Length: 293
Image (cartoon, rainbow, N blue to C red):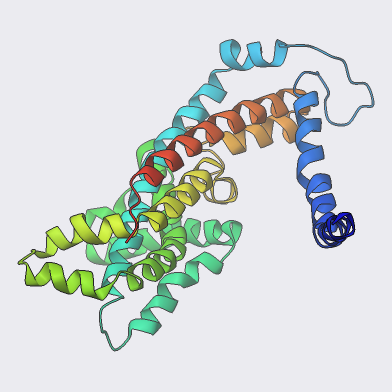
């Protein structure tokens, strides 16, 4: 019996051990080092690290209006981006599970933006907003294309939301398609025989049965929206006048441009706690809605 247990431990050590060591070196150790630096005034370069206690956190909460402004922008952006990207992805998935001739081609087209990096995508859409839309506006006189995209606080906000939804909806679409194709057909047929209308099929049968996919998509959308950095950097750089600066970009600026690494890690530590709490609540709520067939 003891020999069997030893063999099991040795097997787990051989297969899991290297992965755990890599995970510890890449994730766990930097995380705890970051926690330590958040209580110091380290500038990220000097070898001198002085313990400052809670000074960084007091600075963030009471004397840093730019951080609070970026936090409010990130919250508003996350709410809009999560709703729009998931509604768009679910609608497209619902359409592309129907018997269409170009179904597979359209699935590929909608998924393609997801394989483009955030930085490149931001520069492409920056060109579209600055050069493409005004050119179309001059030809068509449609007011939508003549808006000051990226030059105004409101339009810049919605510009980032549009690009984020355009990039991520294709990935969520794949998850929703997989869930929709696993909805039992006999249940759908039984409901139709009982006289259920299309909206009743959608809200009372389809949505409850694909709640595991909703849980995953909402979790990914919330975490990605809160962590949005590369798109923000390449599209607006936080402008105009820091009105579209996300928390991730604010932390990057504080740590690597202002050389206040201790203050930057303190912001990152607070940000981690907020995102962890929000995603945990979301997962608990949506998992409680899941049903088993």
